[in-house]
Length: 498
Image (cartoon, rainbow, N blue to C red):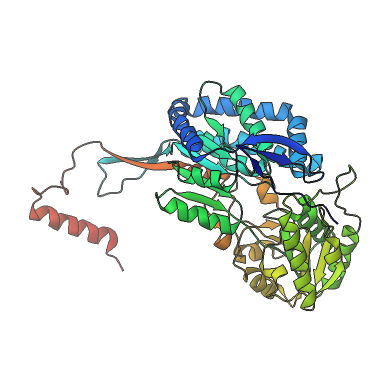
């Protein structure tokens, strides 16, 4: 009889966070009620005003200090991540380092991106001075995932803070300890007000945050949960930014560097036990290099192993219920004529899933159409890259993508219906702080990271200021017919040419 890690269950008003590798209790946290959440948002409302008054320079200095704390205590943070997710320390460090980079970028660039900007008033309104500024929303609710409990939520939290908002953060029930560590570190730097607060619990706590009067919700998680959050937010017209799942493709052209493409595929598919929304799940390979590419992927995959020892390349599946999904997708692929050139159904155990590489899988199978979120990858042969693009785009998702091609990389990237594409390197867009991150379709909408991420957490304010009285007054009942005639003549001169 196999032991399956139980889902954290509540006991009274607390719940336990468990190690997915051992079922050991690594922490106990409160289940915050709707009343608790509402009180946190009310505290955040006061803190938001104080935080906004610090200005861009004041906030940037605090964010700089925060990233310094995270950097100096990086080993400690990585251990907390490992305890709750089971991932190797090196992987925990990678996501934490990327998150620190984003904190630095957001704090440094917020003033330039969100500060007051002049706009042209046009000839008809030339007596006006036109400006745009981006004001803080107020209080932002962030609901984070468990697969990257540092990098992903900080992609919203850091940018929301840099834009002048207070944040109420609800981490996944699988990684509350990581959330607490991050919030406690921030409180050391900003002790005056509860600018960044933690709430913990299950779905009910997250739902309470959506309805607690926040000014925006930033959610990362499944498409199904994202839809429920949108429906709840619609009741109060609370805007949302949704980063949901993906079924990310890799395109390998005939002139691609096959070793690099195979290495990227193996790492993108299996790292973090495949629990990556922008991870590699499908590969479309030009028929001229298909067989050679598959052989390279298998060769590079055969020594990749899941486990909790220091030699393992990735850890356990964090959410036990996902093991059933992974096994079902593999079974469906094989039952419909696909072949496992590595792994298979037996690769899925009670805690760990070993790498599985599938070929000849029908395009309408679950393994191709649904997000697996496990260490599996399908590889398909295509006659050319036009077919590859067509098949890659034939999905309801549209988050990330990767292209390997020496001559057509940019051209192919522009044709893919995804929010982000990397060319000749895996997932590189996630590490570039100036690039926006987000998807289309069932992968969600809105953007975090980059200038777009800062503006996502700001309210656009347009201001027109009259500099002098215009010779023609257009917005008055005292306007004369001669004025209308003059305006008509002027518009014809400006815009009436064929």
